[in-house]
Structures are given as structure tokens and as C-alpha cells.
Image 1 (cartoon, rainbow, N blue to C red):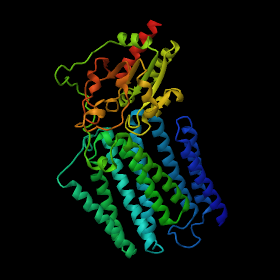
Image 2 (cartoon, rainbow, N blue to C red):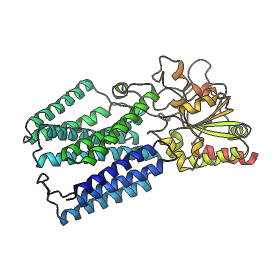
Image 3 (cartoon, rainbow, N blue to C red):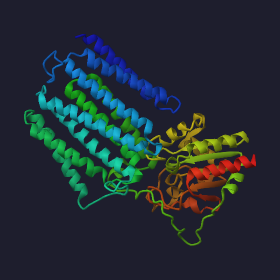
Image 4 (cartoon, one colour):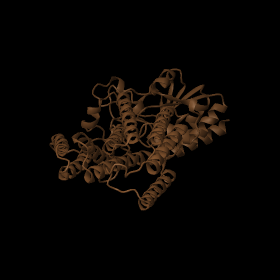
Amino acid sequence: MNFDLVAALYLLAAALFVFGLKRLASPRTAPRGNQLGALGMLVAVGATLFLVDYRFDGRFWVAWSPGNLVGIGLAIALGAGVGAVLARRVQMTAMPQLVAVFNGFGGLASALVALGDVAHVTPQGATLAGVGAGGVIVGGLTFTGSVIAYGKLQGTAWAPSRPVTFPFQKAANAGLLALAVLCVVLYAGDPTAGGWLVLALAVSLALGVLAVLPIGGADMPVVIALLNSYSGVAASAAGFAIQNEILVVAGALVGASGLILTAIMCKAMNRSLANVLFSAFGTGDTGAPQAATGPGRSVRNYTAEDAAILLTNARSVIVVPGYGLAVAQAQHSLRELGDILQARGVTVRYAIHPVAGRMPGHMNVLLAEANVPYDQLLDLDQANPHFESADVALIVGANDVVNPAARHDTTSPIYGMPILDADKARNVIMLKRSLGSGFAGVENELFFLDRTMMLFGDARQTVQKLVAEAKALA
């Protein structure tokens, strides 16, 4: 066995992971970053399969043989086939659900790796036993938690978007967590007592369900990022259990990047992680029409022709995309509208809030699919200074991220959340299905401003009408 070659390939794979992650920081370089990460994984898997002799010290319970290579090859082909089909067929609106599934199966795979190692081989010392058992717990929790997150994003009956709570839920979760930790300690003290490991896995599966059920749909982007971090931690623990360096490194990178992203998302909502996990915030998107509330509150309902006249005569337009854009699959029509306006000399920009959509970067991916130029995409801090000088803020399917109540209404659950300052534009055009609230379950004050023009209906159909009207005015 050539240990030097394996170490060199593992180092190369780790470098590719790091450079890939670095490139993922920008939409312009993200495709190349994804390719670098995939290449790094290919190098790591290839080195492990074909250069590591699993019989060298008798520690691994599966003897290396051509028959096992065939089984491994079939498993890889099956997984790659399913992944390729999903990647091509999944709708953009279902991309967050796909990410949740990936997180879940990543956690499950790590749990099975750690479980398989510690169940068949007595680890070398209590430390490896404890780390391996910890990987089983984190992986199991990640799997069932991701399943529930998928159900909430999909709006299923068994995992509704609204928070699901019951009496003494927090106490029950705390008890399950304490029991899981106790199982790890007892198993580390006696690695031959496999029953503790089985109990730890069962407890972690239950804990994953009960931990995610009380979290509302408004917080699913944060939950996805956190579960992504958990899957990395589980992979790293599995790497320690089987003493595989590249699995430790890859898991640590995923865990750290997921945790950083979680922190960014919490900051974007001005909420702590504890508040996200335990406050049962958000009621889910309510698409049903609602009447204007409060004395003298009314909305101005305009036609596509009215809005097109305003847009084509503007000097600066800032588009604010939201989940409604993804639901309607209106990104290509929106890009066409942007091209028409730019041909008339209008400056068009797109303002992206960190928690717009149902996963981090959802709107960036959506607009990139429609080939919107990267230099037109602005994040929250970049976009906000431009709203006061913008003639029109065109809001397509966004809600909570442009609600002015976040600035001044101390009784609002979104108070303090950084928002896009769309209400500061000279005119606001808002495309919505109805006056229903967003995932936070909060009525949007922007609906009732004197300078807000409401266009009700499906976002794609409405944007297509705007395109037609804008062409007629050319």
C-alpha cells in the first residue's frame, strides 16, 4: 500500500474542496466552484477505493475483494443515476426540498458509516467509540429532521408549514437529548455494549422529528442551513470513527460553512438561533385573499397597462424577487421585461434579500437560470442605498422582506429584521396573488402606501402582460 500517494491525493482533494467553497461565494464563479468540489470528491473516492488496502491492519471488518468492488460500483451507479434524474427534473420551486433531501441522506450515510464501523470492530479506545457514537446521533437527527423540513417545505399534511407544538415539548426534547448523550457516555465506557448505540440511534431519530416540527415555514431557510451543518458534523465524526482523514476534512468544511451560513441567515432576520429553533415563529404562506384592515386602509388596484407606462418612463427600476416568482416560474418573462426596459435606457437592478425564497441563494439561482447578468444582482446592503433614487421598485412575489413594519412596529414578530427599503422608492409596483400574508404570518404595510400599485394575479401571467404592454409602448 502506497501511503504517500494516498496522502498526496487526499491533500489534493482537500485543496479542491477549499477552492471550490471559495468560488461558491459569488454567483459568477459558483459553477466552477461546484465543478472543483465534484472533482475533489472524485479524487477522494478514487483514492480510497483503489489505493487504500482495507486489509492492512485487520481493523476493517469487510475484506477487500473484487466482489465488494462490484457492489460498491453498483451502489455508486445507482446513486449517481438517481441524482442525475433529480437534478434534471426537479422544479426550481422544489429546489429547497431537494437540498433538504440531500442533507438528510448525507446525515443518514454518515450515521450508517459510523454505525457499521463501531458495530463490527472494537474501536481503539473510548475516544473513538464516543466520537463514532456521536456521529450516529447527529446523523440520525439530521436524517429525520431533514425529512420533516422537506414535508414543511412541500406543505404536506404530515408536516404542515405552520409550527406544530404540544405541551412540554421543550422538556421532552431536552430529555431525549440528555438520553442520547448518556448513551454516548455509556457506550464509550464499554464499546462492546452495542445496545447503547442502537438506543442512541433510535433516540436521535425521534429527536430530529420533534426538534423540527415546532419550527414554522418562515424559518425553513435557517433550518436547511443548520441541517447542512449537522450533516457535515456527522460526516466528520464518521471519518474519525473509521480513521479516514479526507472524510474528517470534508465533513469539517461542510459543518463550518453550514454554521457560518446559519449565522448569516439569523443576522438577516435579526434573530438568534435559539429564537429560530424554539419560538414556533411563522404560520406559513397564506394565499387566501384578505380584506384591508384598520381605519381608512385600502389598496390601489391597477392594470398592467398602467404599470407598463410607469416602468417604461422610469430612469431607474429595482426588481425585488421573492418566492412567488419561483412558484409562478416567471423568471424568464421577468428577464425579458428587464431587457425591454434597458433597451429604452432604463437602469435595471435586482435586489436580493438573504432570506428571500425558501433557501439561501434561492433567488440568485432562479435569476441565473434566466441568464440575468450577475452585475445586476445586488445584495441587501448594496441595494438599499439605491431605493431612494429609484423611480420604481417592482416587487415580484416578495412579502416579509419588504414589510416596513420591521423598522418601527415593536409589536411585530419581524421587528428589527433588516429589510429591503422598497417603500423608499418613488413608486412601488407589487405583484401578488392576493393580500395574503407571507410566511411570517404578518400583514404587509407596503400594500397600503399611497404610492403602491397592486397588480393581482399569477406572477408569470402578470409579467407577460407587462412585457406585452411595454412592447406596445416601444
